[in-house]
Image (cartoon, rainbow, N blue to C red; front, side, top):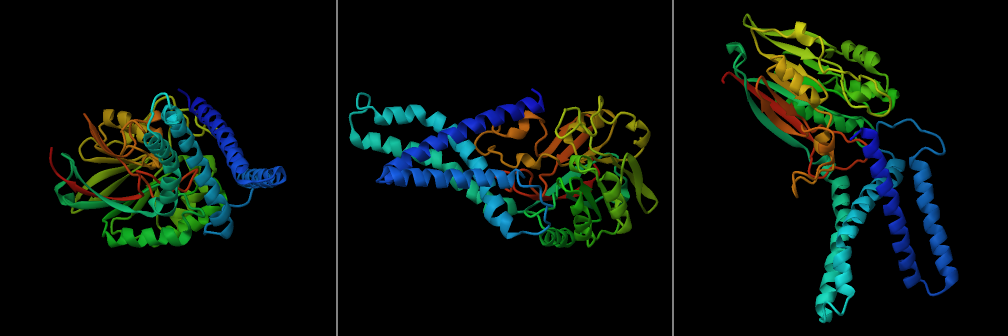
Length: 401
């Protein structure tokens, strides 16, 4: 199924959800308001607020530059709107599932006991209300609940001098009002405290606004690692047309972005091979088709060193299959945010990201290579995380089969 078709289905369901909640709101107003005049005023006021929120959040009155700090506008308008969009959609889907339960609760022919009918009705209402509670948690706490993931990686071709070598990965920063400069600097301090030998930055430093690139570069300048800080670019650098400019900015502060390049990381006369590529995709993504390819990592063979360990930084985890075929020992990726709003704690199948990639989060292995998908620290679309907390990953490299 194409990405555009998925978006179309989601939009159709969302419109249906908004009609459903309008009908429910009308019923509530009718129940609470004593006069028809009061009902009309309340309905008009509610619709005005609702339409104004849509207009402001979808730029009907003009686009504003993306701030790199939290503003009152974002706290009082953008965040509540995002919470409503996600939660009302999920609650609508649950309301559909709960419809048979509600029917039973209202039917005296099925359940004669008034107490049982009331229990079923209240249970159904609680289930439908759950997304709104979970959404508040995801907005106020879930997106900030950082986890430090420690992953021991066994690489047969790792030189002896690098046994115990520590790589720390940061990904999907998405600077903006919900990942402001001060917050990024906090993550920088946490990263430095982990005592990395090398730091890998795997893309999506910005979101949509090119004017934010200087701020994110400045916020990352305090990163420190004795073997250096290296990175690759993500789809949002391609979409915001900042690939060249942000690469130059990083170079000015001593951070090297590898763009279809390799670099030997050396010590004590031994080295492993570090490779970085720009974002690549075989899916038609919006907006535009920047970095669309027919074959992943085509022509990368010349960058792979056969007699030592090869580590690839590639924003998109879908390059892993091809990387393993090329003999790349370890791929470091991001892009998915771990699903961001994932319900895998309920069922592994309930993760929207699985519609577009099998590599959602964590460690994967297949003949020829290994992959780790970092959940990132930022968010996209909605500033919420459920079942996919932000992550900084610490890799300890060891020699072994």
